[in-house]
Image 1 (cartoon, rainbow, N blue to C red):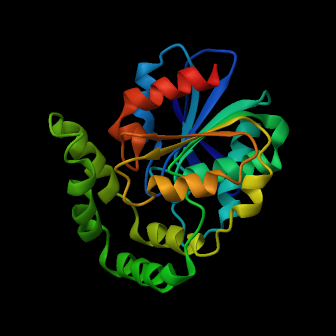
Image 2: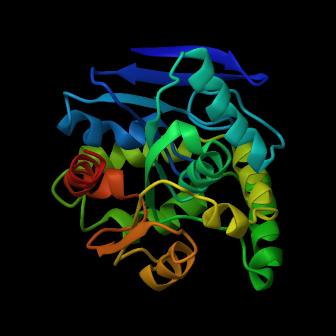
Length: 258
């Protein structure tokens, strides 16, 4: 079921589907939407999943500014509204994984396990000026140039035999609001996750993609080492694993979390 909820001062689109004693909460990447996880959810019909478009993304309310704690607060408020009080299995991609980490660090009793994919932990000092420039370019000129520059190299191999999936992913990326997308980049300039990683108490699986040029395995492994109870795995995939290799991600959700 897809519905909308007003929480934490914004309207969020969400999908709560399936049955099961444990709720799996799936958080998308920057500029993504709940559809990022469609094929993973389709492979696990007997599980209960909560997905939603984070503020500024998909069909949720667009923004002109936001903080990282806004995203964490949205997750908390949505779980409360839906009366999901038992511990959840929380999985996220990139910035979604960062949201999962901070939520788990602050609400240890509400997270049973974490599955972190290509986790983002902040912008290096030497990249801050370039990131701000990129935010300005997107805000003024839109996303088409950036999407069409990155998408072929990222998805050409995996979607070679499924052009419809490639068109769908590209269409969703181009549908992003440029101002909201720029606001996400500026939010990342202030992201510092080191203290949160060390406070994660639950078992955690960290996945890195061997073909991920944005968050390569060595960088993800370095960040994962701050988590007290973790397993690290480098897998044959790219940055947005649930869209690129849904079978692999579904397998890890099933085997690690149960």
